[in-house]
Length: 247
Image (tube, rainbow, N blue to C red; front, side, top):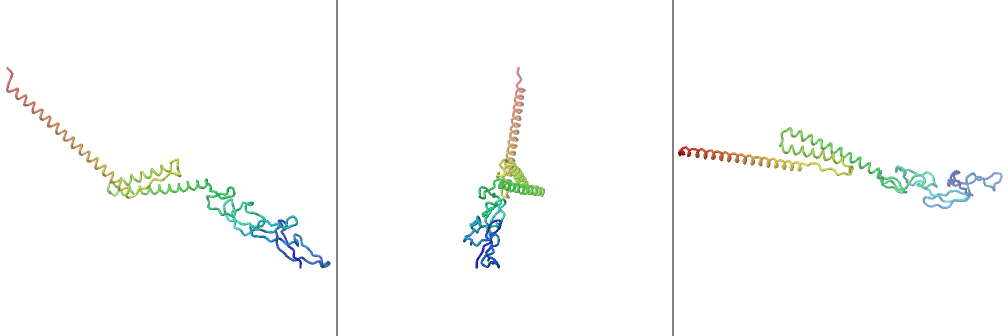
C-alpha cells in the first residue's frame, strides 16, 4: 500500500498523509490528487514543520501553540500558520515587563516619555491630596480657635498649617516639579513645640516691657527727686540771702 502526503496549495505546508486511489482501468497506476507527493516529509524537531518547496521537502519555523506577544502594545497573541517567525509579523516571545516599556531594537525598553507622564500624574495627585489635607486641617484649626482654647496653641496650629499650605504650593510651582520634594506636614508635637516657643517669646517680651516700664518709672522718680532737691536748694539759698541783706 502506497502512502501519499498532502501539502497546502498556497504555502506548501504539510497537511496530512493518506492513500492514493487506484485507477480501475489501470490497477497498476496510482491516481495522485493535486498538491500531494509520494515522497515522505523529513523528521522535524520542535518548532519546525515540513514544507514542499521546489519539488522537495524543507523545514521551516513553526510557532503554532507558542505564546507570543504583540510588540505594539504587549497584548498576548498567537501564530496560526507554520513557516512564520514572530519577528516578521510584529510579535515576540518575550512578555512586556510593564506598561512603561516599548519595543525598540528587538527588545523591551523603558519608555521615558510614558514614565515621565506617569510620574507627573502621580505628583499632581499627591499635590491635590496634600493641599486638601492642609485646607481641612486649617479649617479645623480655625474652628478650634473659636472654642477659646489656649491662644498660643491655636495660633501655632493655624500658623503651622498655613505655612505648610504655602510650602505645598511652592513645591508644585517649582521648576523641579514633579521631582521637587514635598514639605513635612505639621504634627501634634511640632505644633505644641511652636506654641511653647511663641509663649516663651511673648513672656520674654512682656517681661522686657515690664522691666523697661519699671526702669522708666524709676528714672522719672529719680528726676522728680532731683528737681525737688534742686528747688529745695534754691529756696534755701533765697532764704539765706533774705536774712543777710547786702549793706
